Length: 297
Image (cartoon, rainbow, N blue to C red; front, side, top):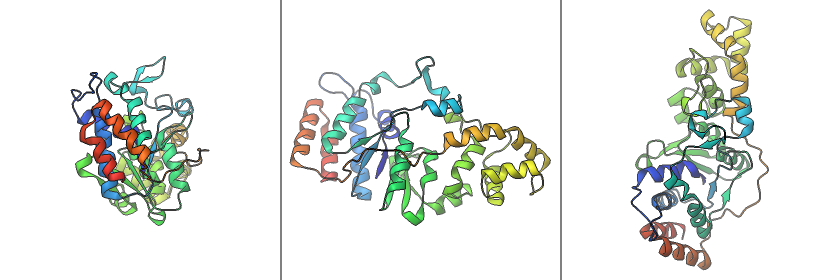
């Protein structure tokens, strides 16, 4: 099980009141919430291995070089390149890492890459089935029924988890997982600062990919003419061709990072249990740490 960790701790932070604090007054709502999420996921899906995938860079420089608008709307300080994150959450991130470490859950990131890229690489390497836990639609591109890779989507909240397979993708978007990055590039995603091709919405993008296979085929048809494209569609695609060529590698997750070897097996030793219980007592994490320990055991 590969966790899109930041997506989960943001959800935890906004799902619980900031009045949940440690004895010294430090907010611990995100810490408690993330522990509850881990407990729920492990209980329900029973993974043998668990990895907390990390954003070493939430807005990688190479993606910004290709597409300056990438996540630009989320900048807190444009010159510093920092993300808008509530102070009460920022203070909890080191504690989240400490809690994961105490439980023996490895935190894996990669220089100048996002958690998405770590997930893409680990999923590509896996020789056993993989569950990816995220609310990020971009990670739908890693779904692969043949290899047992599926997404556990938290987009609708923890009470409405959805298992996304190839069949679900086909029914919802009309494209395969292999086509999803092409589809997202054409359609765009305002939440990531991706404008898409003007005049090409989700239905049109899916229709084009169904008929023409992939983005290269769509652009080739736009320049050749014919292939069932209207004159307006062809012109819009030609106008957007430069954007598409720059945006596609931004949207595609990296699948070949050189990641460190880590022990991902869930193994709750006496030493880890003691460290986790000590942390829970020190920060008054209540039943949240206990639930996580019970699930991992």
